[in-house]
Amino acid sequence: MKIATLLPSATEIICSLGLSSQLVGTSHECDHPDNIAHLPKLTSSSIHSQGKSREIHDSVENLIQNTLSVYDLNLDLLRTLKPDLIITQDICDVCAVPLPQVEEACKKVLGPGIQIITLQPKRLQDIWDDMQKVAEMTDRQEAFHNFKSDVDRRIQAIRDRIASSEAPKKRILTIEWMDPVMVGGMWVPDMIEMVAGEYLLASPGQHAMTADQEQLRSIDPDVVVVKPCGFKLDQTVRDFGTLKEAIPWEQWEIFRTDNIFLVDGNAYFNRPGPRIIDSLEMLAFCAHPERFRDFGELYNQKIIRLDPGLKLRKPA
Image 1 (cartoon, one colour):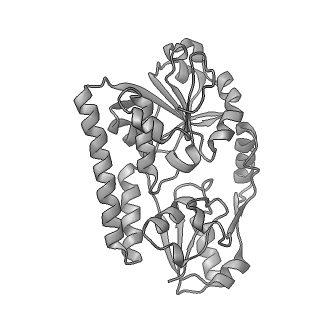
Image 2: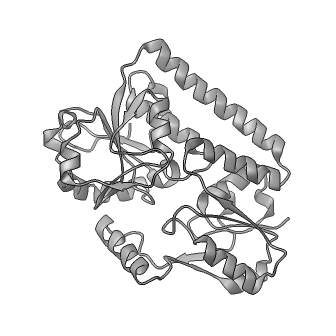
């Protein structure tokens, strides 16, 4: 079976199931694991992804208002590769090539025999269900069972450690975009509850909401995790000045603490694939640094903990 993936989480799912040798093409954003870097890129983006938060947001809004796709799909390459299976998504037109665009492309250049798997995760359990669906379609059920057993073990270990410490419940705010300020939803509230947290300004299973000044002043978080969708950690650091101005930090007690964290939202929290379990361990550290110091050390290149007053510190 020749497989093409049109988003990073799909590529990681395929590789976690031991099918990387059957990949023939990926999206331009697929960057993990390293052994897929040489594969042809089936997609490209109309957005300058290295710009500032507001510039990227305005560019996306302009494309959508003009009924244009954020992404292009290379039909000539698709025709050449002739995959038997394509994995795409149907939850966000800004995250990857929209499903209707994929279906139309397949009809044009591949014919009726092509199989399409559509990933539609909204809650944490949906991510595991999507992985299981891919495993069943590719006859890799045992690989999924082994993966899920490890996930369950790691989740239970977090729960046991929190329960044994009688850790107080933390009010946790996750920032998914910096200008405008957007608060993470979808599967993130489920993750927050798993680490004995209370999610703020978020709704489980719902897309990120834009938070205005009044809403931000109405809360008082114990922990803030900044994880912009599509931003690697260095890009978040470069654009963090935008968020300093957008949030009434000094009205929050957290401004005088070191409980504000910048994390790699591109590879982890906003990528609904195998590494979402790593994201949960990172979140456990952010919520309870004294209880999960080992996670802080394990992911020290993926987390930056700010000193009081929003001053940058070395990686956690």
